[in-house]
Image 1 (cartoon, rainbow, N blue to C red):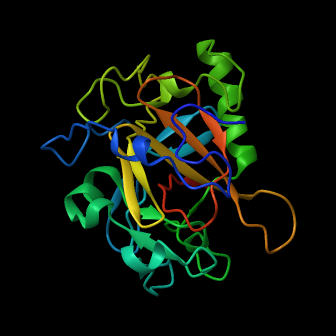
Image 2 (image 1 turned 30 degrees about the horizontal axis):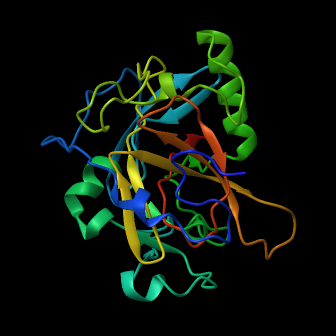
Length: 249
């Protein structure tokens, strides 16, 4: 089934080029948002992330922007030309949207699923990449607390997850209140050698692949868009570059 504003229609169908470029995004001149109440976490590169408690979970407020694994090994910088074709490559990769370090400071970096790693750990010490089940737990809590719709996918929690206003999100940024303090930003994606969606939507990897076995081609992710409140559950192929939002252990 296709979903509105999703770059992919299935793990094996090429993204819609029109949607990739129909973003009309707006950027802020600032690289930071107001710091929420809560603690901080520092990754191995020295990037500092704020935390927010949502129910029993403690989430990082900013998207991951680290370029090294927790053990100090570098994450391979993606090659735009080569990575548009190597759809069987299982090497962990990291990208900055449009190769811009300024974009990375605001929206975080984009990672393929293999960068999440089992042999290596991408999350800061004391944190991890959340599973599909942990996103459903977040959805259940927010649906109860704020009365958001529970269907489809992860439910209508985009309203309380997205940063309010149109400093970073494209107009109209439907329903966004950020009541949860999660402060989701529209970091876009990288696929088939093309960046797209900055300002229009964001995707967050989960640690959960689709299906069982070690060679599954796709993994679950969360999609939020500027013109809706549904947190869509989508399954891009693992070579796509999208955002990562970490959860404390």
